[in-house]
Image (cartoon, rainbow, N blue to C red):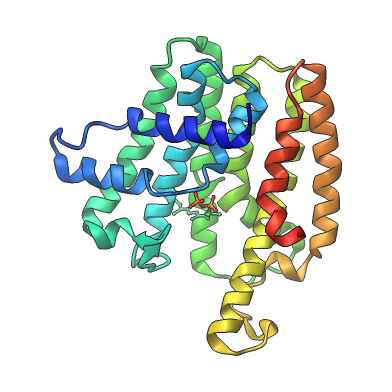
Length: 285
Ligand code: GRG
């Protein structure tokens, strides 16, 4: 079992979660298919599966896809003219460009609804796990998570303290990675020590992911404007706080602890290392 196979299983599961495109309201359902099935990296469901280490149960795949539904909802909203005002996403016109703004907003809202529905209707997961996963998701979407991070970002107020910058990044991106990992651990009933190690890993992974994302943004900015990276002073980013080596070192340490816990739980811990290497190979190579 490898990461490529897991990703193909995720891609096979995602359409099963959606209402058929021919079902009324067709325009809405078509927009949902368009947004969700666009070629994404599927990082969040992969993280759930790596933590759950469960590769035979279709219910686990469905639960793993919950984070992709929420991620897609957030991307649709983020791209709107009133937010990031993007026109392209995943190499295609954004959902609001291809359909309409109102359809995009309703599709996003329905993705959140769908996400909770997948959790509630998963037959092989016990009620207490469903409640814990749902409660965690409420936190991740809400004003302490994605919504809060997005509004802070849109207000673009100067955030001086390192902790405040990290908090914003965590809310906008890191907390959904964390949700994905912890959901995997919960599905397999891992103990508190393992969940703690996996949470630390998810945080370190999120930080490096965001740091590299900032590096890409800055290099695109430099290419497009011909200006020095330092002149991209629109936002204070993680790049002003950390070097990639520092963050990579922190991730290596957190990953070692997470792998130890997965090994202790009898999981195939080598998948986690393969996953991390695949994400960052372009930068590390
Ligand atoms: C109500 C769900 C909801 C959200 C409202 C709009 C919003 C608040 C939050 C947006 C947050 C946002 C867009 C954060 C950036 C996330 C990010 C790192 C996107 C890129 O992720 P990848 O690289 O993309 O995993 P692919 O396309 O591969 O899935």
